[in-house]
Image (cartoon, rainbow, N blue to C red; front, side, top):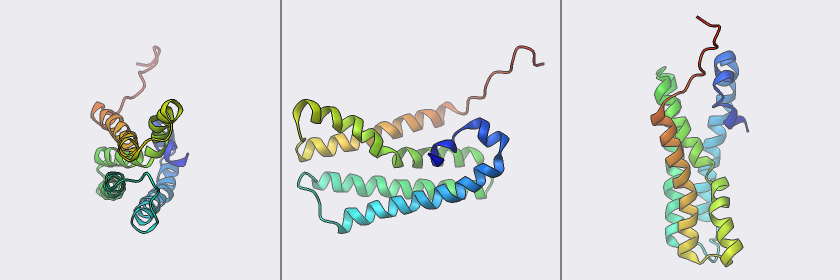
Length: 153
């Protein structure tokens, strides 16, 4: 929830100190989450339907999340707000992949039962890809500021 609030334009603008303080919690938490996911992928027993493709996807997207958060942090240290926003958006999108995976795997399971190893990997991968496509669209679209009120000059 705290990560999602980082994207609220009004909150960032009205309370920049809150945004910075929350970021100091969100970024390390995101890094812990990504490193934990990589650790579990490498050292925990895999489920029966975990294919080599799914393991590879988890390693790729976990690494991309770490890289995105580090690049976003480095950008804000250089006061490059546009790059900070872009990299943090990408990192958050990857981190939220599990939520989207519920929307990709869930309907399959409801209609056809437990997916086999290849469909499972593709459906899980689709969750991350969907999020990154939407994030990249938002980054390239640029920030949209609210229109001034009719009475403003």
